[in-house]
Image (cartoon, rainbow, N blue to C red):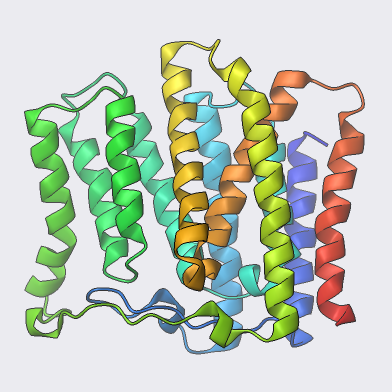
Length: 317
């Protein structure tokens, strides 16, 4: 179950299930909120079928990035891609999450891309280009959706955890936040006169009662798994060296930020689900790497059955 072959089997089965749900009419389009300069990512692709396959491609890239981050930075102290497979299972549990492009899929992708340069600057404040790149990536997201503002704060805390801030680093942060606007205004894609406050679209208006109930149950289960395993793993993580503690501490910051946004910005709930899945998957990976359970396969099967049950629920009601 911890092999690469199992990961690719999960990848294929998850995508096949998402495609089947799409053509069965179980993927419900969800409107996005406008950002500060660009349209919501939901609106970039108007063709539903193309949105499906682009969404699957983004999800595959997210899972590969999780595997890459773990192997490059030894995040979980194991090379098993099982936690990336867990991410795919969670994504598949709700076809409306996996079966279309959304602000949430872009948010999760940009955060994972920004983590790579952030982790590379641990105790290396001279790497200001990497710090600049981190905030340039996240600042670009703010042009499509306001929720990235909270993750700018999370990455600023991450810089403190990486012990990489200096005067030049702070200047790199400010320049990185300005650059996306600077470039898009210069290319004529954004007119400063068109800047406006984002329009808020409630997820409760976009979904019917049954779909909303599924999302609430799905999110609650994922949240409980992530919180329980995160608390369980915390004691062991504190025994690691300073580098590994900093890396995992930043994942905790991301998790806390995402959970806080789920409760504070609950009208915008849908966008945070992929990021919540990502954070929970990391905690699942930690749990199995730390405990090395002899009958761990039983827990994995139970986990798969829970999300398979939520998936089947989409076809029952």
